[in-house]
Length: 142
Image (cartoon, rainbow, N blue to C red; front, side, top):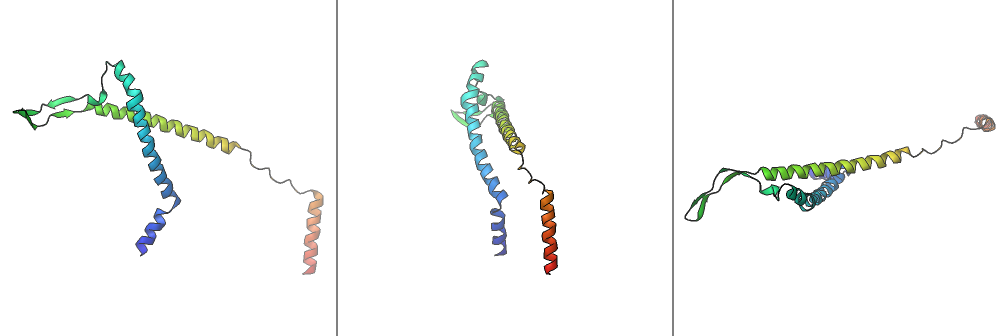
């Protein structure tokens, strides 16, 4: 049972829960960025470079072996277009995360700049004297 208690203590720590939420949100954010890249950014870029779809760009290293209309051995290809697509995805995702962190840092700085609550004013001479008198009376009663 010690193992289960230890695992429960680990799994229910705030940091682990925060990390789990971050992973889930990150996965969803990744899907949004992938859609942004594939559906919004890449079509105009494809048109600019002559209608090329990056994901289909490849270099055939060894052609497929076909006999009697059936493929015996598939082609060996170097899929550099898929790599280019992943680099573009990563760059956009990294930029989005950078902008998000930058905004969060700016918000945190604003929060830090809020003035601290004013310290209570120093006691007046009269208050100090009254405190001294009170303390002396307490000592006399003892």
